[in-house]
Image 1 (tube, rainbow, N blue to C red):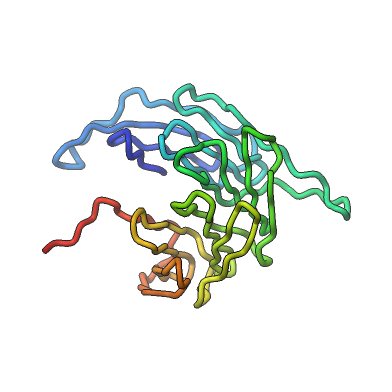
Image 2 (image 1 turned 135 degrees about the vertical axis):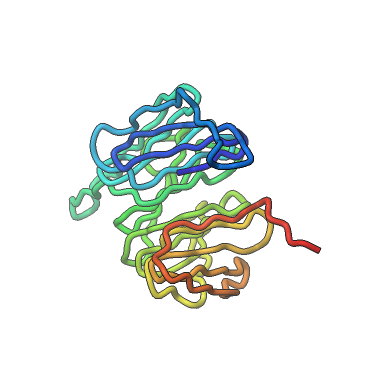
Length: 244
């Protein structure tokens, strides 16, 4: 589920079978008194396979969807129409075909919905440009376990990636250059990453039940909190302000 920022009290949800629903709520003092949209917008984004990842771009006009057996694709949320679908990379030198299995996606820039990054279960990170071609314009392998989370930096060309064995790294996606790995490996699969909108920090969480805060410049661990359960998502509250 994703809550829209520009459209107040609007959410987008997507099931593993590809059923997408955009729904609005009327604000009220009590959650019990909130009124749901009587006619939400809904459609299906895949005919087969399972949706495992999705993302909405900054202006909330386009969304990405991808998964197991589902090529990553871009949809116009205003018209509820698919505007682009990726094409699988060609077979490698051993004539082995890489299966469709996308596990994470993110738009690369807040100002451009045409470029996005996708992580796969085959430990690949791919950069797509829908204005250039259907196949990845660049791809590289990262370690040996599935990519589980990717998030973009504010500079528009750095991405942070986390995988199934707890490795966290930053990459310059323009050339696929590994900038460095974060110090202090997580003891379980990373499932979510979040970049703070102002401060030079990122947050990670995963199956080892720890929420971790990292410095993006030194790549040092700043704080870790044990939360007693498997964690699947982390977000920053951009409206939070300390008192005093």
